[in-house]
Image (cartoon, rainbow, N blue to C red):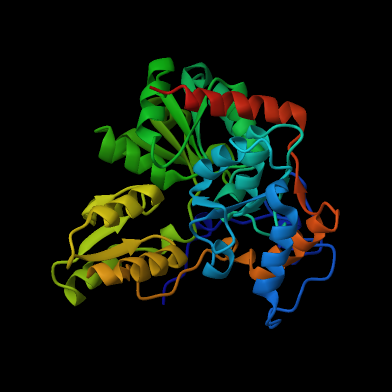
Length: 394
C-alpha cells in the first residue's frame, strides 16, 4: 500500500469545509448553499406539466438556456442548447426576455449576466450548482500569484488567459491585467494573441486545456510548461523555473474530464475494434495524445454528425451528453459509447433537476424573482473587457 505524499494534497482551510457542509455561504465563491422556498417533490408525477404551464404563462418574458451536460428531464424545456459561451451569447441576443433561466452552473450564469442588458435578470435554478474547476482559482489566490510573478521580475512579460470556466472575479482580474478569455474552441487563437502581447502566459484555471493547447496545437514542449499550485509557497516553483517557462499553468482541472485515463483509452480499443476515440481537451495530456480526435463539446457533436454510418465512437466527456448522442445517432447505425467504464456525471451540473426548474419557473410566473445571479458593476466592467478581447480575436 502506498501513501500519497503530503505535498500532493490540496489542503483547504476550514471555511471551505463549512461551505461543503452547507453551513456558510461565500458570495465570491462558485458555491451557493441556499435555495429559499419549498421545492416540489421529485416524485411528483405532474412536474413536467407544471413546468410546461409555468413556461407557457411566462411566454416571451422567459428564455431558458440548457447546457449540453444537463439531464434530459431539464433539457426538454430549453429554448436553446449549447456550451457555456454560446448560451451566454444566445441570452444577449434575446433582449426582449425579462428573465434568463440558465440551466447550467454558476460561472455560466455570471457570464450571461455580464453579456445581457441591465434590464434582464439571470436566474440559476439551484445556487449550489457551481463548478469545481472554477472553484480552484479564487481572486485572492490569483492576486497572490501575481505578486509571486512580480517578485520573480516577470509580471510585465506575462499575459493572463482565463478559460471561460472561471468565476467573474477571475475574468475581471484577466481583463484588468491585459488578458483575454478563451473557450475550448478558440484556446489556440487566444494563446496566439497573448504571445503577441507578451512573452509568457498565465493560464487559468484548467491546466490540462492550457497544456494540451500549447503542446498539441502550438508545438511547445512539456518543459515549456510549469504548474503553479496555489496551496504551496510561491506556487511550488522557484523564480528560475518561472523565468524559464512560457506557459504558467494554474493547478486546476475538471473533475469529470480528469477521470479519463490512458487505461480507459487502451481498454476501449481492446473491447471495440476499430473504435474512434474522441475526447475533450480538458482531459489529461496523455489521454489527449492517445485519442484520435480532440475538441470542444460543439466539435464532438459536429464530428459525430459528419461521421459515416457504421462507425464506432468512444467519447471522453460528460455522461449526459454521451448518452444523448448515443440515442440520437443509433438510428443512423453509429455506435457511441462512454470512454470509461465508470459512470461520470458532472455532479454540480446535475443539481439543476426538474424540481428546481419547476420551482424557479413557477416563482417567476407568480411574480417572485428567485436565485438571481448579479455581478457587481466593477467586476462586470473588467470581466466584459476580457470577454470583448476574446470576441475581437481574428
